[in-house]
Image (cartoon, rainbow, N blue to C red; front, top):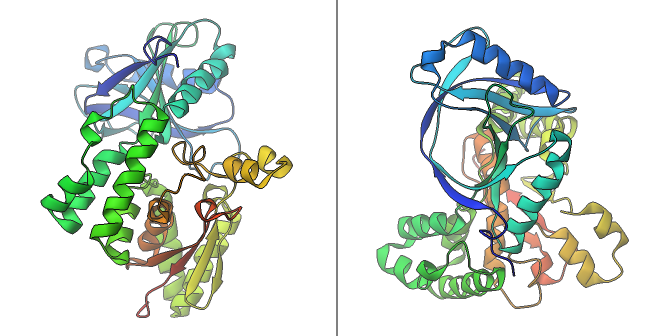
Length: 356
């Protein structure tokens, strides 16, 4: 396999930075350059510390176009009616520089994301572009940044939090040998072994707490919308389950939530949509169907290799963040169906607390 370096993909650590930015919905890509021009005109030149950027948010309520944050790194806070200042935290990225017409940008993205997937690397729920030529952002080089979700680091932290240092060391053994150049097979076999070691050391509740806490980070702004809907409905009706139904109704109407959930009593059932809907629909075999359904690059090529269903608690973390954020109380989530168990879908049951 061609290495990431040979492909021109570089691993970078992006330091924490102060940025002045505008969050908005754009219908066409050319609009972000207009926003970037506005920022360069309204921010004193001596306060700008580097090239402009754009963050594209994948999990969003935006129905058409793009949900973006366009900004500049700055030395001091700048607040206006449109411009807001915040700190972007440190992050690890895979960087790939696009050269040539902006119309070919999609091809460069395809190479970056395909290569990352082939190495079993996963991203967080947004990507970044850096416009290396501030005078000509649309025509100059554009650095694409695949923001890495460091699952192994999260696993280590949560193992220690729940089970202690000794258990963490036992379960994480061999993880320090994994690098960005490790193959997807090497990553899979390490995860398989780690889940087996975890199964031997923890009960179901502790495994759920640990692995669900390693899930992709659901956007805080989206969760806040659920919380507002729940609290407003609860105030109006004084009925917790009716407030839960109001949240589900909001999810049905809003495009940022995937497949709408269903409630039966104190249980909410959520079924994920396929990763590749077209291939899933036209699959010629059950194996092909399951592979096209699974989002995890580690698992989808190893569905019959016997990895523990404990690993699917990572999927529960997506829904855990939503519902605990909405109702403000812990929930327990059960894996009802999984491609790892031979099912053709992954379905989760969110058990609401009795004292809701």
